[in-house]
Image 1 (spheres, rainbow, N blue to C red):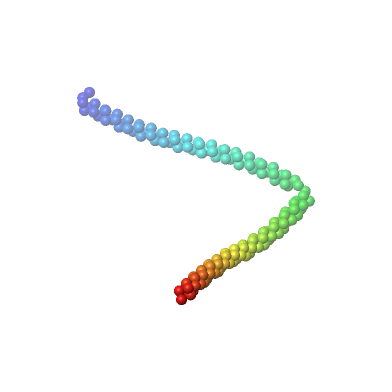
Image 2 (cartoon, rainbow, N blue to C red):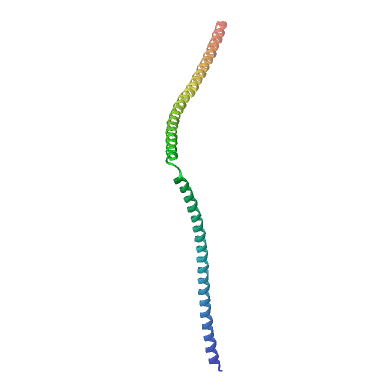
Length: 150
C-alpha cells in the first residue's frame, strides 16, 4: 500500500469512527429519554393506583350514606339547621361585643387624656402659686429692708 492509499484508508476510518460516535451519542440520548419516560410511567401508575384506592374508599362511604334511612338524613338536616342558627346567633353576639369593646376603648382613651390634662393643669397651678409666694416673700423682704433704712 502506498502512502496515499493509507491516508485514504485512515481518513475513511476516521469518518466512520466519527459517524459511529454520533450514532452512539444519539443512542445514549434516546436511552436517557426512554428511561425518563419509564420513570414518568411508573409515577403515573402509582398515582393511578392511589386514585383507584381513594375512589374505592369514597365509594364505600357513599354506600354507607345511601344505606341510611330517610329519617336519619332528616334528623341530620335538623341538627345542621340548628347548628347554623346557633352559629349565626354567635356571630351577631360577637359583632355586638366587638362594637362594645371599641366604644369602651374610646371612652377609656378620653378618660386617660382627661386625667393627664388635669395633672398638667394642677402642676401649672402649683408652679404659679409657688412663684406667687416667692414673689410675695421677695416683695415683703424688700419692703422690710427699705423700711429699716428709712
